Length: 138
Image (cartoon, rainbow, N blue to C red; front, side, top):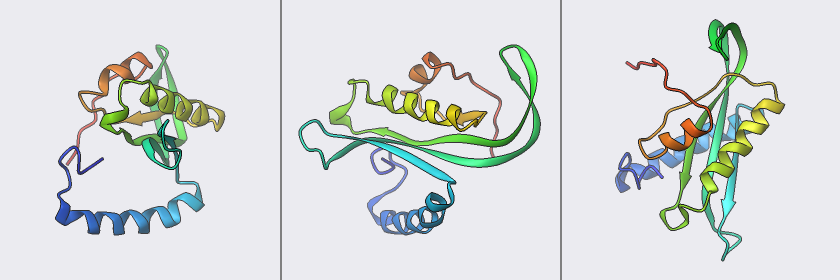
């Protein structure tokens, strides 16, 4: 995914994979990360799409939900690594994976759910009820 979108060149892939292995070796068993994948129709062992949720704790913070202020506190989910291989796009895999992840998060009582959207993914997320926020980064 990151090679495809130009964030990692071939020279940086090895260091990235090592960092991922370190992170996921503790985050998955601890429940800090969950993921779902979709396999190819032709080859069941070929993953063509995936999405992950990073589960993290947040401090109590006012949040607008359905036009009313609530106090968000506890776990939140951050959707990461939503990706569909180019050959498998336009088949509804992204929508299906995101909807599955959202159902799972709701069943766990996790709210809010956040993500960073690419321009290509933004229309899907908006259709699913996500709205732009004022996040900034340093």
